[in-house]
Image (cartoon, rainbow, N blue to C red):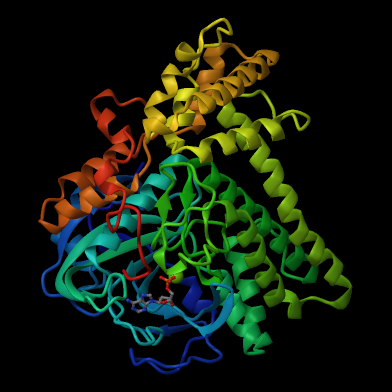
Length: 535
Ligand code: AMP
Ligand code: MG
């Protein structure tokens, strides 16, 4: 095996996206509408004093980068946008999207600048993208920059999701720029100066539903077909040569991947917060970590995004339905490439999302509960009744499922003994009234009977449950504590969480405090329970 790369100039780029797709003839960063093109050439804006906060050694490894190159000044200069390494070609892509259900027209990479596609030694394609490296033609009325707090959140969460087994874009690096960025966090007339930062995101492709939608909206079917054909050839290479029949199989696969991603979100209690069609990846990856959040107390109605507080369109319990709606928009976007006899198949592929999701959800719930398989005659009611219980008093979702694996299967146990392992999951002891206690114990006994009907040993049930019910997630308050320190120039907690979250399913006895429920101070604090799109 070749030794890892010690100079970024040795990365191999193929930059197929820009080689094969049409470019905007106009160069430069001035804001504009871009027609008949997939991207515009654009340069990152240099920054005064870049400083590396953290990098992910896992994705660095996927890119064949050595530890020494990741620690070098060259790395910090390149991944802040100050310098390009050999083979990099920088551009921003054009896309549109439905935001909160309404068509928003051209959006595009307003603060993302692509550096090109690396082909690693295993022949894998990894696109690199700087987020927060300055304005592009797609920046509209914004500055193209990102602040430290949202960059810490994106950096840590992408890597945490990966280790949880959730399909996601990755993050290579987090760099402070030394520049100041002004943000009015809650859009309430209180702008503040914040430290600027750049994250280098990494994914096989950053193509979104909105990349296709923009061409259909503009009736530019030539470019639509070019992009669809390119995507199938490049990002879905197992599919045959593009044709109307292949467009249908491709769409069906996008539906399956999206369903799979949403099942994972529901499993770990991740709420994306802004499921606009421009934030939906064609590969079914979690993309664009903005005002996302993790369920602390289980609540189907919860959203972390204050911008969505009244409608709660993107609440936890609505994510599966919104993904379906978004796939419907993608179906509309590719429809012009199909023939009239394909319409029924397109509809069938779209409808199959619901089935795939339901199957995936059932298997996931069976795993969470440690059941051999989901039995539709009993387990729907078992789950619904559990959700009602979890929702009616403040119950920490992560702790509850993790501790459920420790439940004693001794049906002769008295109620106190039975509930004992779960007590750490409750936020408000006064809510555990005698009536609630009785209901909970009744459910637990029903659950024990259900588990006993299976053939799994107790040990095996625990192992299975602990492999899908994480002990450690990026709790909203933990991210905020790491941000508070980073803003004081102490990067230790960012790096500590990065390391902790590499093994979210393992017991890590010296890190037990990071598995504890949200402290009271975090209940109403900005960044912990409330976030906005301002980032
Ligand atoms: P988001 O809500 O983060 O998915 O962003 C929606 C659109 O706004 C995308 O086109 C982004 O590129 C753009 N955008 C968000 N923040 C900024 C910013 N600070 N500067 C330029 N464009 C931005
Ligand atoms: Mg976005």
